[in-house]
Length: 211
Image (cartoon, helix red, strand yellow):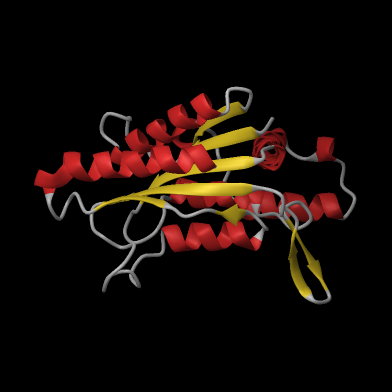
């Protein structure tokens, strides 16, 4: 039995977000194929995701120097507890399903803040004399990525820092990232929205059966 963490990184409701609709198709098929697995949904825009800011970094240094957690300011303790809870939740999963849009050729800022909670030295990777070593080598992920234009291939593929960045950071900590599902090009040709979404849902069903 596997534990799946379904991470949604869009503030839009499912009826508006085409990538979320495809992701729901993926999850429905996955659950049908793997009824004994546990699925936990994390909606980032409904979650307190602490920023890795000066306050958190200062607290980390103080704790490493021997300061007791209870001696930190109450608001800092609360922020650290929220941060660490997200770290432990991520580490406890076996599989990850990310659904996210392309915003200004990158990822939503809340997704970047979330990445900072699980790419943690000593937790998901470690430093060695030979360089960084990934620690999550027995896990896998799939990315379901929406964009108004087409960036998965062609002349604009070098522009995007969305799907390639998330794929790279997950591979950095050892996670096997299977081929992504792209929901793209609707803004270029709105008349083909239904066709594009239907094609992506078909890919999602096939991918879910093998995930």
